[in-house]
Every structure is written in structure tokens, then in C-alpha cells.
Length: 68
Image (cartoon, rainbow, N blue to C red):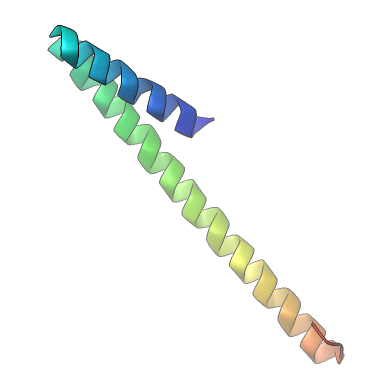
């Protein structure tokens, strides 16, 4: 959902830039950048948690004596 809003503000900034509304363009660009970086940080965080969970499961099954 945040990626959608980041893209929405980016498109709004492009449209405002075409019409010469520089104040709106700058504000929209800043909001889009902030939302994009929040999305990026959350994505990397969830990816790391996923990898750690899978590694934990593999270690558990190995110590248990089963096959993965």
C-alpha cells in the first residue's frame, strides 16, 4: 500500500512539473521519496526475518535428525 502511495505522489510530482507548479512538485517528490525509503526498509527487514526463520527451521530439523 505504501508503494502505491509513493508511486501516486511521484506521478503527481511529474504532472505538477509539467504544468509548472514547482511547490507542489517539490512537496510531492519529497513525500514519494520518504514513502519509498520506508517501503524499502520494511521490505529488507521482512526479507531478513524470512531468511533467519528458514535458517532456524533448517537447523532445528538437522538437530532433530530429519531431512530437510
